[in-house]
Length: 381
Image 1 (cartoon, helix red, strand yellow):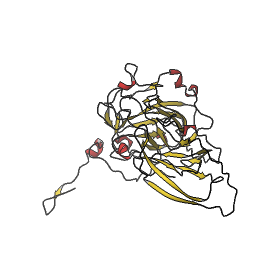
Image 2: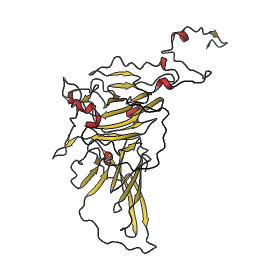
Image 3: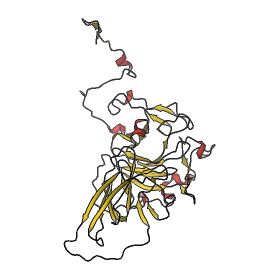
Image 4: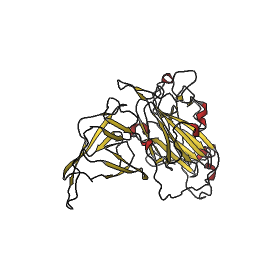
């Protein structure tokens, strides 16, 4: 099942038939039986149908849209298919069916579903990787170095930018891979409580272990974001969730400190860190899974919460990382990962280059362009 939508969150189910989830984003997991699956843009889930106690008949495959931070289910069905179950082998069917009324839902962005006491949530971070044939794509050997990066996704209230750490991504006007000196990634106008527009880039040191804390807190937090990374798959080590009170209200997680001078709800959260400084040694974080974490390339960053992911900087290149809600990405919720950049060498000497008139280097600005008039009074360069 592939989430190819540009914005909506979908809820998939075949009422009466359990789903045995075996993979997500192409990577195997310990099989997990659920009744429904929440799927965000860009995610994939492979599952089988548990038919061992299912009677013959026609069953509905249904898709609903979930809205808002509490994922309220809209009643109209936006996707419907029919599944005809036969029993040509006359296999025995257990007539006992569950009468509890409870449903198990995979990929909740919270541990307790608001105002839904009959739903048991299984966040995707609760899945465990299943040992399998692993293909190694490391171009560089990993090192013993580790670095941690906090990235907050939201719409900070000072300017309302769709941004990461208050930085609205401006697309480079030249190839960032082959002409890096012509791309300004300084983002100098941004600070802890001020947003700016720039070509946001995160430099990753060659071969190092990279821990990313993807958060969705502060005064720019409004909705859950599906974050997609190019150039890598990553391990999901842990997710932190908002607390759901008795009335279904979501109280943001407090593990992250946005600004020591401000409450989180008043901060843009552009310069976050752990409230408990011991957690900078990430293996000390309670309930973190470094043994068999699920592997993905798209992860939900919960409203009022966070997701901790891990990669190794062993794939030299410039890789895009962005929210996969299209309007968020196009409005600036993205950045470039400048990975192991010093290892990008031996590019073809005759590779064509294209320079920007807005920020061309001086050597190109000083190039003399012959300008002459054509017969219609136009200009030829």
